[in-house]
Structure formats: structure tokens, C-alpha cells
Length: 444
Image (cartoon, rainbow, N blue to C red; front, top):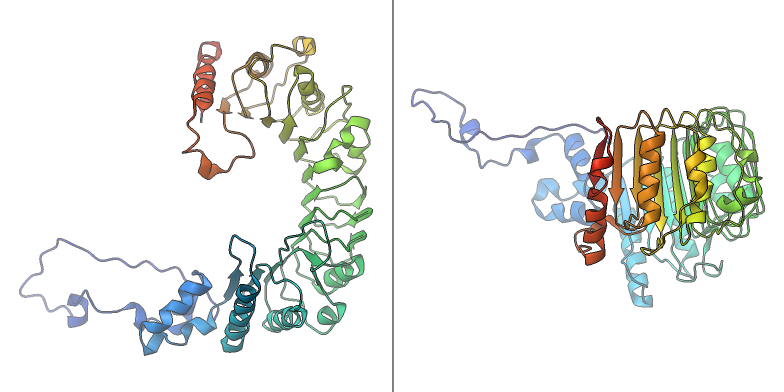
């Protein structure tokens, strides 16, 4: 059980069958249920691709399917998109208990609890965690969303005893949201998970200090999001490739991470570039950098160290004045090998007429090949910015312009065909005569 198979099922239509053909009766009977004749291992693999609700529904198909869903390797319990009432929460908790009691598989690939469990069910969550760890779960997700996001009140507290009493050598991914954990609990988790590759902790109000280290640590991705009481992070992880931090200003010490190639900073911490101290934790080998500085207004031009290996830069800015774009000039100049530059602008004023004079004296960006601009409105600032890139990037191959706000959902694009968006697209098309041969303009 638990193996995954790739199936290719097809039926041929329109071919005439010879009257002398002696094909098997089962081949002629196209309406025969052949799927049910597949081995249990393959059927369980198919069910593991479905949601829990869909998999459970197959139990009514026939006696053959009645209990197969109980062997599925993916146990995902999703929350409704609303705050739960007490009786709804109670019903969901009972549903989880019944499914776990019925489950017959020896292992599970993914265990996810993603709904507002609320107070009073701590003992249930303890049992769910113990169950998942006993089943050698690989991917563990606890998203116990609580409708008081900046309070630890009501959040489930992970007990160290559960980790110490369980074998954790199957875990490769752990995602905690609105789960109270301490630095000691995280260290216990890391020390007992030799194959853990991804750790994400968000909205943990009890997390004050965090140390990520260990001689045999295989961790590749680390994300710390909105842990507002966190004062200190220390990282020594030889395999770490990607690090994301979103939250308040704190001390981040990256002591030993030779493979670190991607860093993402959001929130107040990203704005530390204004005093020049933020990059003390960024190492020269960085290849991808994302900064969300939408809460910052720059009083002076920030200075950046050399990011000599940076290939991809993604920048979020809240732009109300031309001067607010000056920070990106320092970043571009500090990144001589940059290939992809994504700039996402918020609150750009269509009537803004300013233009930083510093644009005219910047050096060439010889390696820049793709420039993506979101939040384009077609005023003088963003138009001149595109022209600046065209004139200073000799190897440029493509410019992608998107009038949609960077924070708008992709699903909203179809209903966002307002006059402003249409006008922005028209203004973007006016840039075509300025394109050099070989440069493609894509307007979304």
C-alpha cells in the first residue's frame, strides 16, 4: 500500500470490428468496470489523489470499494471559509475522530488539519498528532486558525512529550500555523527529524528565540512568519537553500549557511535596509532576493553591499512619489549579474509627474534579460522607468507589464476589466516604438 502508479486509460472510438475477429469478450465490452479490477495498491494510489470527501464517497460504488478509502495516504481536513460556530466545530472534530478510527493504512504521506479547532479540544489534537506520527507521516500541517490573530489565547500548545514519545524519522515537511511552540520545542523537533527538509512556523506567539542548528540537519527551506514576540534567530544549517522571514524587527544571525541561495524578507524587517544593517545576515552567495517594503517611506537613499551572485530580484514598493523608487537604483547597481528583475508597485498616482534625476546617471545593467512590472498605470514615473530599463539593459529580451495590483488575486483578473486597467494597457502599448530589435513587450 502507499505506492503511486501512473495510469493511462483510453478507449478507441470509430473503428469497425472485423466479423472474423476473435477478440476477447471482455475487450468488446467497453462498458465493463475495469478500474475495479485493478490491484488494491493502484486503487489506493488513485484515491490518495482525491480529497477526503471525494475518496469517502467511493465507498458506495460497490462492495469492492467499500473500505478502500480507509487506506488512503492523504488525510486532509479543510476548514470552511468562515468562522465556525460551536456545533459546527464539534461536528468537524467528531468527523476527524471517526476517520482516524477507521483508517487502516500503515503509513500516510500527508496529514493536514486546517480549520478553527478552538479551545477545549487540546486532547483531541494531541491524539491526532500521536496518530499521524505513529503512521510515519511525511508531511504534517497544522493550521489551527483562530479568529484572534494577534493573541495566543485559544491557540493549541504543542507538548514536547508528544515529540519525545514518537519516532519522527519519516517527517520531511512540517507546517505550523497558530500553534504555540517554543524555541525548545523546535530544537527537539529538529534534533529528532533527520530527514526534515521544510519547516514553516507562523503566528506562534509563544516563540521568543529560535535556534536552527544541528550536525546532521538536512533542512533546506525555513520560513518564519508573523511570530511577533520573536527576539532572536540563529541559523547554522549547512543544507539550507531558502530562508523567509516576515515580521517585526528582530536579530537574525546566519552563522553558517553555505548553500543559502534565496532570501525573502517581508514586513518591518525588510525595511531595515534604510539604516544599512539588514544585510549583515545576507551572504554573498545569494542568487534570489525578495524584499517587501510596502510599509516604508525612504527619507534618504539606502546603501547596499555588493550582491555579486544575485540573479533574481523581486521588490514590492508602495510608491506615492518618484523619490520612493530611488531605493531600487541602489539595489540594481549592487547586483551586477542580475538576470530577472520583478518590480511590484502599489498606490502609484496616475497624475504623478516627478522623475528622479539620478536615473540619468546610472551605469549599464549588462546581464538583465527580463523586466517584470506590476501595478503599472501609465503615468510619467512608471513610463520613464520602463524607458530607463530599455536604455540601460543592453541584453534585455523581454518586458512584462501588468496593470493588476500585486496583491490582487489571480482569479480577479477576469472581472477587473475597468477603465483604469484598459487605459493602463493602452499606455503600455505606446512603449512599443521605443523597443529595440529583439526585445519583446508582453502586456497582461
